[in-house]
Image (cartoon, rainbow, N blue to C red; front, side, top):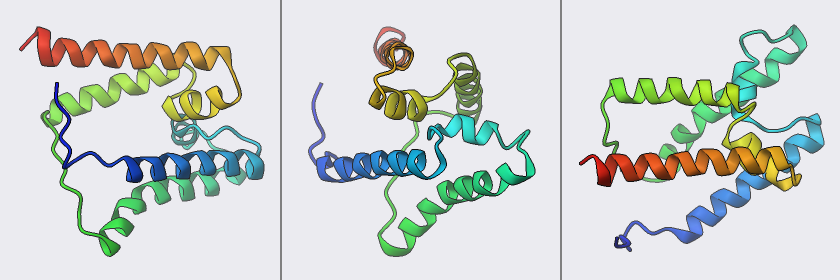
Amino acid sequence: MTIDWNQFTPWASLSGGVIIGLSAALFILVFGRILGISGIVGGLLGAQRNDLAWRVAFVAGLLAAPWAWYVFLPPVPVRIDAGWITLIIAGFLVGIGTRYGSGCTSGHGVCGLARLSLRSLVATLSFMGAGFITVYLVRHALS
């Protein structure tokens, strides 16, 4: 395995992590809720009237962020080594997994671990381990 030093971006990655951490901390301070994307998006389906506006604004911000980036900086090249069917199936499986795991990477991995939640530690180790195994099988064992 080698590192593509042209694509290695530790400062951008660190900045992104700091922004995510600050956003999660601010979200819990302002709203008293855990910042978990699957819970926020899932809550759109049965949201109460007073709960709908902030959820829609949050998702709109997630969708608008790449467009805002594109306005100020050159587009980042994206390469996805999968077809649409694979992506749809993967998204569906992730959705099922977040429901069974009672949260996603942002809820468990960022917020839960910061609160020293044992359940979040087990969940994070589980989905990271499953990801490592899947990548190994798809890229090395099956090809």
